[in-house]
Amino acid sequence: MTATVVVGVGGGVAAFKAATLVREITRAGHQVRVIPTPAALEFVGTATWEALSGAPVYTGVFEAGGADHVEIARNADLIVIAPATADLMARMRAGMANDLLTTTVLAARCPVLIAPAMHTAMWEHPATQDNCQVLAERGVHIIDPIEGALSSGDSGKGRMPEPEEIARIALSYLPSDATIPMPSEDHSDLAGQRILITAGGTHEAIDPVRFIGNHSSGRQGIAIARCAARRGASVTLVSANIEASLLPDGVRIVPVVSAADMEAAVTALLPEVDIVVMAAAVADYRPLAPAQMKLKKSEETDVPQILLERTPDILAGLARSPQRPACLVGFAAETGTREQVLAFGQEKARRKGADLLVVNPVGQGRGFGDVPNDVHFLDRDGQVVGSASGSKDDVACAILDRVSAIVASTMER
Ligand code: C5P
Image (cartoon, rainbow, N blue to C red):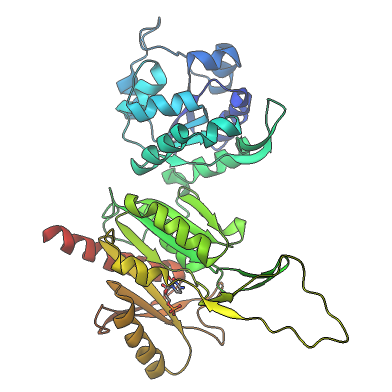
């Protein structure tokens, strides 16, 4: 199916990369309408955009030829803005409509994807971070800038990812590239909900080269993140050591390493979320005093004794927090017979205080990695209220059905 994609171009050095983005989207068989900001034309001119897209190019609402922003917005299946400058993001956040691009964004109801690019200092400035956060909460999908060489000669975070990568992400938002199954009947039952999902497994440092970790690949949490985004939620994924190629598009990624990092990230994000799903395997213990230098072997000394301490129980802390989210979901990976797994789960459900505990048997080829999953759902009192099995996408969908029902019931109260 041919889609109509508006490619917005902000006034930054990375504007030239948008030419490749336009070419890739056109090559995939879609119609592109390029709308540069006036400043973007300082970098790449109208003639280039018209030649690449085969459509007229305007920057202002009142330009000759008359560009009807409402019509452009109505026809768009997707708006992708690359590069998005700090100034453009600030104007989008403020709801300004002082050029054709911002006016079109305001009038559009299709997904909006932005790829910010700027100097590290500008990206890290609280104003930009705040704008980014607000835009993400409103449902704008953000492709975070990457580390690398910047036009100033400095190096740091702020570089726009390669346009081929942006094109790949953009195409995943179009109906013709519906590679991700949408298992729910209601495609937007989580619209307006802000969901934080933790996934992966924490690493607790023993010394600078060694850690205590676990086998969690992050796949179940990722499936929930993808499915939640498809169902209209604004998704933040707190990713603990997940292989980069597995990370989903269209969600905000917050990387963490240890349980302490995860607790700090979740606590900081808590005021801005409605739902928390703690799918990550968080270490229960960590070395009390990680060595500053690599531990050495020696013939004379005994094997080292590593003293451990408890990590904070993030999930239990969230359940008691005055900022407790409207819906809190925990996971319990357990080993043993079905009866043992359920008994461990029941005890945990009562102790943790989450609205829903997803209990899954692990080990011996079950639970971890690229394998199907089977889970039991327990309520806060430890009662078994259901189960689900199948691919991790199927299980994600079943979990979100329950989340959706819990959210709906809290709204009724
Ligand atoms: O106690 P256990 O590790 O089995 O609990 C599993 C659940 O608790 C998961 O949802 C996990 O993300 C969460 N957890 C936590 N903080 C810890 C340990 C586990 O939030 N320190």
